[in-house]
Structure formats: structure tokens, C-alpha cells
Length: 337
Ligand SMILES: Cc1cc2nc3c(=O)[nH]c(=O)nc-3n(C[C@H](O)[C@H](O)[C@H](O)COP(=O)(O)OP(=O)(O)OC[C@H]3O[C@@H](n4cnc5c(N)ncnc54)[C@H](O)[C@@H]3O)c2cc1C
Image 1 (tube, rainbow, N blue to C red):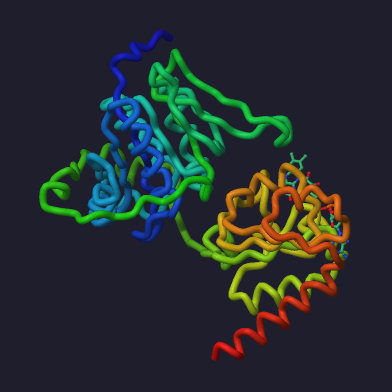
Image 2 (image 1 turned 90 degrees about the vertical axis):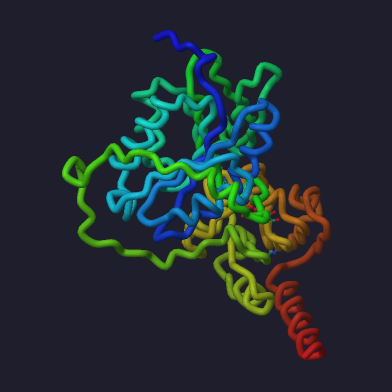
């Protein structure tokens, strides 16, 4: 199938929301989308879908979108893949965006294929870097070969160029002063899906209390060096008001829950402080925490790779070092109180 690529313009960002609250990755993608749109000299368009979510469309404009498309209908709440996919596909076919960015969340991954396959689009999943080349083609990069290399994928012959992107890899966009003119940039589009056409019905929604470590300011992560004893990790995280995280080795052993795994097959975190205790520094782990502001590593092996990526290194047994750090923090907190 030959596509007239010149017919396609603009960078679209899908603003994922649940119960009217935007997923943080949406604003991260909006900031990145702004950069890409400026480079290709195109418009940045936010696509908002949901029930009674016009405020999010306005917020997207305040955060840097040139305009927002709003598909507002009860059929979009709660999320289901078929109404979302069908509405999104119809808009893509009618408006022909050149680049489409979607969060690599459960929701984004769930419906992106429903848009890409019928539209004959190129879709790169789980990207961690985005850029455009001299011809304005999207360069979507993601880890490959078990994290040992990065693959950069471009789609010269198909449109739109779609990517799902990991949460936490880009800075977020901040809202600016929104004025009347900017609010006028919200266009309510025709809703092309109806409840009676939906393939599924949501009977009950159970929101799990799975922790989200991606927003934490302080993360204390334990690895195989914990040897089953994670108490020192938990106590230091508690006293610092942070979250507990883990390497895959610690998760595989069942010491720490999977939702707290950091790395290529876990979460990406960017805290102010990341403490890696008993973690060797495998490339797949580093990928999930390398953008932390300050990294402190605690390891018995002075040659552990993690030290090359740490701002501060402590050579020692975590079962001795972490309780001492916890004690020191407590003392400082008492002095400050
Ligand atoms: C496709 C693929 C995806 C992967 N995805 C991920 C991922 O998302 N996240 C991830 O973490 N890994 C991932 N891995 C696994 C990764 O390659 C490593 O095996 C893993 O990160 C190792 O975990 P670790 O550092 O805790 O364990 P180890 O490599 O065994 O290191 C343990 C460290 O603890 C130190 N130590 C031992 N005892 C103590 C002590 N008492 N006090 C202090 N230090 C001590 C040791 O010196 C050592 O450096 C992936 C691998 C593959 C192939």
C-alpha cells in the first residue's frame, strides 16, 4: 500500500486520563511533542478522550499544545479498547497526523495497535528516546538485545509514525497562563462510536492498590545483596519518606513485589535521591534509574559497576551501612524538629 506521506502533518499526543485525572506520561509526551513539532515546523495537537473532560483539553493547550481535539462522551468512561481504538482510528484517517505519541501504559499499549494496524501505520513500542532527522522523520529509539543496545526505528513509507513511550523518561510540561484565545483552541470532534456498538461492557472496576514508584522523590532499592533481608531497605525508605524499589534479582527471589522493579523490564524512575543497596549495576537495571539526580551505591564489592554510575559510593555490607544511615537521618530529623 502506497501512502502519500506529504498529506500527513502535525504531531499528536494522546492525553490519557482515568476518572478525569491525566496520567503523568501525557504531560511528559506533550513537552517532548512540543520540541518535535517545533523542529518539524508543525502544530502540536493534543487528543483528549473521556467523559466530561473539557478541562483536560484546556489544560493541554495551557501546557503547550497548539490545539486540542476533544472527544467527550460517556462511551469513553471507563476505558475500553474498542471505543478508544475506533474513535482514534477515525480521527487519524480523517485528519492525517504525521507523528502520534501515546504513553506506554497498560491503556496505551492496549489500544495503539487498534489504530496502527488498520491505518497501516508504523508503530514502535516502549520507546525511551525520540527525535526527528533532517527530513522530519521520527527517530524512535528503544532498548534491544536484552538492553545491551539501542535500536532506532524510522518509518519512511508509512503514516502516521506512531510510538508508545515509557513513562518517566521525559521532563513534564508545566502549564502557562491560559487565556481566552488559547481556550478557543479546543475543538470538540464528532464522536463516531456508540455504546450499542461496543464489544465489551465493564461490569465492575477494581482499582488495585499497587504502588507507583515512578513519582517518588526518594527511592531506596535493594538487590540480590539483601540476601532475603529487606528490613534495612524498608526502614531507610520510611525514614526518608521514600519508596522501596528492587532489582530484578530481588523481585525474582520474591523479596520485593514486582511493581517495585526498576529497569528495562520494570519501571523508570527519576528521583532526587536513588540509593542502590546490594545491586551490581547491570545495564538493564541502570536503564531504569540513570536519570536520578543523586545516586548513592552501597556494595561490598569495590569493583561493582554501580559505583561508576553513583555520585556517592559506600563499600560495605548493606546490613550494617543502611541501619547506620537510618540512625543518622533520624538524629538529624530530631535536631531539626
Ligand atoms: C532482557 C532482560 C531484562 C532485564 N530487566 C531487568 C530489570 O528491569 N531490572 C533489573 O534490575 N534487572 C533486569 N535484568 C537482570 C539484570 O541483567 C541483572 O541480572 C540484575 O539487575 C541483577 O540484580 P542485582 O544487581 O540485584 O544482583 P547481582 O548482579 O547478583 O548483584 C548483587 C550485588 O550485591 C552485592 N552484594 C552482595 N552482598 C552484599 C551485601 N551484604 N551488602 C552490599 N552489597 C552486597 C554484590 O557485590 C553484587 O554487586 C534483565 C535481564 C535481561 C536479560
